[in-house]
Structures are given as C-alpha cells and as structure tokens.
Length: 555
Picture 1: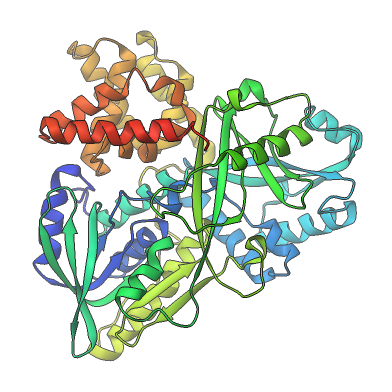
Picture 2: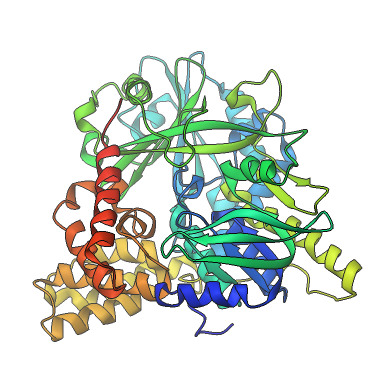
C-alpha cells in the first residue's frame, strides 16, 4: 500500500485525468459501500481500477440505513439460513478490520403478547442466530423473564410484556464505513472520484468499452475506457441498464425507510431495543452518543431518487410506534431533532409486500458486457464485492491469460482501524484526550472523534494542537473542528459543506442543534481551501441550508 495515495480533495481532478489517460481493467459506476467494496477488492488483487460517483460517496443508501451491521434475525424467520450465516460471519470480519466503526452493543428483544416472536421462538431463534453467526460464547443470547426484562429496560411497556431476549448487534456509521473502504481502495491504487456522472456508455461492435463522464463541479467532460464495467449504482442501477438498453427481466423494487432522532434524555434507553409495532412490523430504537434514533419503515417508493423525504405520515407512524412501546416517553414532533430517509434497492418479486422482499443481491449480465449488481445489504457488501470481482477476474483470465490473486479483503484492515483489537480503543481515547485536556476539550469529545476517524484521530488531534499553539482559532473547540475539516479535505475528498457535516461526521443527524453557528465557518474554510468563488460558495451554503431544513421538516 502506498501511503501517498490519498483520497484527497486536492488531487480529485488529477485522479479523473489519470483515469482518462489509460484503459482500465475495471471501471465501477457507483460510490456507495458496494462500489467502494468492489474497488478495494479489485485493486488489492492487482487490477487497475477506476470508480465514479455522481453525488458524494455514500450520498444515497449508504448514508441512510439503520446504521447496523447486523446478522438479520428477520431473515431467520423467513427461513434464509444461508443469508444469516453469511452476514453473521461478515459482521465478525468487519469488527476485526474496522473496530472503530463496527461496535458490538447489547440489543433487547421484548417478548410481548401477540408479538412477532414468542418465548420459545425467541429462545431458539436467537440461539440458532448466534450459532450461525459464529458469535463468541460471552456474547451469546440470554433469555430474561418479565421482571429481569423490566430491570434491563425500565422504559418498556409492562402490561403486554412477557419477557425478553438479550443479544448482541453491531452498530456502525454507514457513511464513515463507506469512506474508510474507499480510502483503503485508493491506498491500494484505485482511482476514485465523487461528483462525476456517467452520462452515456461508449460501445465498440456492440460491446461496452467505456463511458462519457461529466465532472459536475468543473463542467469538464471525459471519456473513460475499461475492459470491464460494473454498474453498482444502488437505486440508480435500472437507469443505467436502461441507457444500456438491457432493462429486461428482473428489475428494482425501491422501498423507503425513515428514521427519527430524538435527544437521549427524551428516550434514555439502557441498550438498543428491537420491538414490535401493532401492525406486525418491528422497529429499532438505538442510543448513540447524546441521541436515540428510531426506525425503520418499509414502504414502496416511486419519487425522486436523489432526495427521499420523511413525510408527516412517516413521522407520526414512528412516534406512535415508539410511544406504544415506551409509553412514559410521550414523544411528540417537538422532540424530533433530526431525521433521514433512505431507499432500499431490492429485487422486485410479484405479489410480495416490501417487508417480504428478499435482501439478497443479484448479478445481471447484459449482452453488451455490462455487469450490474443490485440488492443486498450493508453487512454483506464485502461478499458482494468478492462475487463481482471473481466474475471480472475470471473473464479477464479467459480473454487475456492473466492470473489474479484470490480475494483478500477479509484480512485487509480498513483506514482508521489500526488497533490490535476493539478492546484497545478506550485506552487510545484516553491517550488522545490527555493531549488536549488542558485546553478544555473533554474525553467525551475525543471519544466521539475516535468513533468517526479511529486511529486517524491522532493526526486530527496533532493538527488541533498546532492551531491552538499558533493562535489560529478563537477557541479549542473551533481548532478541533478545523482540524477535522482539514483532515477530511486532505484524505476524504470533501468538496461541499454537506459532504463534511452529513457524510464525514454525521453532524446533521446527531448534532443538528449545534450546526447553525458553525456551518457558515465551514463554508468559508472550504471555499478558501478549494479556491471557490463567491457564487460557488453561496450555492454550497444554499444546498446545505436545504438539507438542514429538510432534516426537521415533515410534509
């Protein structure tokens, strides 16, 4: 791995030009977690790789999920043993390779009258789930009677409560995970750019040989050529298949999932809860730092793909469900501090409701040679990537006689994950906090920072101390924010205010109340560093102001 290969905002254009200067082995369209995973797998096997994303990395589904790397208990109920086994094992691999953003946490499944799971089904189901997923013995499920369930989670509704199952799930930051995978792919040589739209395909004798790509920031256009092209565009895959004239047979079925965030003191859960709703669905309520978020819904979607919104009906449904299970909370619209909506690109099956549709991924092959991957889950992205790169490598071997290494992403530590184990992280937090303690930066602030950037936090803390020493900022808190922003410019290809405050740091979702005072400063600094003119800066500010408004607006 070359340490100089950074996913830098300042080398983005050079990256695009390098992509355009040669014929790549593989070009990936789509910069969500699936595309990032494919880029890492292919580059680490020795292929020359390019990736383009028309929005920011992770701007679609990969920043709008329930933020769980979970084994899918629901899939066991559907009888999909193989999927549970695979995603359970993937969870363990991800925890090993990115312990800063894949965090094991207790989850309680209340057993209630007329609920989805009875006592026996919960006990047996969680046991099989633990075995299939290869859960360590100390993390295996514990069954609780009613009294112990009430003690474990005092906010639960008691009149219908019969007991509970306590097990482990893994919380993540989906956008950060995607960015860490993308950074690691870049370190292995992949050329990756955001805000680059594949406008049309280029063909030779009926076979796809490249794309015309537009840099949406500069307006420049490029022709990018590759031996193999993979469509990993998530909710947009069918649009690309249509451009390729290969949209036949199976197609996408988009469903929308929404999440609401409330202050932790309004729903102070002792651990995450996976609970029944009276209509037969189940929702999660998950504590995270100073917030608790609740979701998700599962409704058919046919609107604008770039910006699904949380409707008033969505908001009222989630609040009603939460208040039914946690009656003393009495949550209202005024308690909602933020929200998000995301799309699931599932494979359509006639006669099935959104919740019944399979979460399995599928690969589609076009007569032109375009390879499309659709469906799947966040937890399974690495295996999805492995399957795609196996196909690409096999084709290249048959056509050119080249040989490639087998998949090795199960042992590649992701950027920021350089810890001997997850158990080392608390000591690392204390060490970094000690460096800034005298300047009024709390250990909690550093813990949140490490939860985002992992072992790369050391660079951010060092830069923060330099700003303080040089009196470059008004306060230590401002110095820390500036250090985060500069790191994200140097190593995470931040191009807009939204990139930084939504996908690199999650602030819009979990610290929205603090943003009004800081986002103009972020815009100023970005414009300064990226040499943006007043018009560009105003456009950027306006775009973020819209996102800021939408996160708390229900129509």
